[in-house]
Amino acid sequence: MTHDDHGYRHVPAAATPLRGPGHPVSQGAMNVRWLLGDFLQLVPGVEEAVVVSSDGLLLADSQQGMRSDQLSAIVSALTSLAQGLARAIEFGGVKQTMVTMDEGHLVVMAISDGSCLGVYSSLGCDLGVLAYQMALLVERAGHALTPQVRSELHRAMAVR
Image 1 (cartoon, one colour):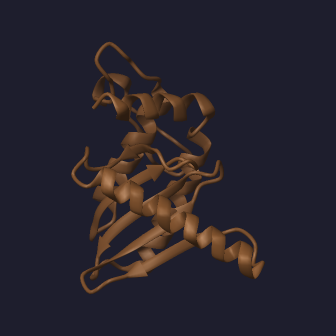
Image 2 (cartoon, one colour; image 1 turned 180 degrees about the vertical axis):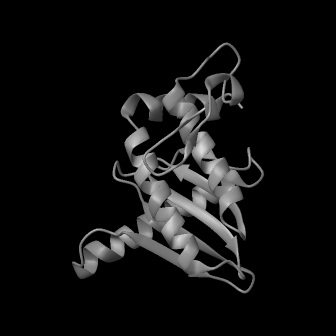
């Protein structure tokens, strides 16, 4: 096991079960999935996290499908709506979108390649800690989400 510049561990390939039937994926693709799982355990109150491509496809999730498909569709729609608003009022690109509900929060952050990170947390989750940890995760995931890794993640999610 190795650590990156920010102290995050990188799990050896054998320790991460992100493989479709007969379709092994690269270490980069496994690291994205592992980063989400680690994020879920690191931030108290986080219920689920997803990475959604710029065209709305689920690339990775932290809960292995508990609500991932539904959450990714909502994150994609919310991102599209926020981007439309930003264009209409000419305020530049969307960095973060947050919806607060009676029982929790949905926070969406842009990743550099056009994809986004969506996180659902309980109402008691410390939003400062959540935003900080999401920003770190977005930075790490942005470096890892090469076109090849995005393609591998999409294929792996499709065969689940």
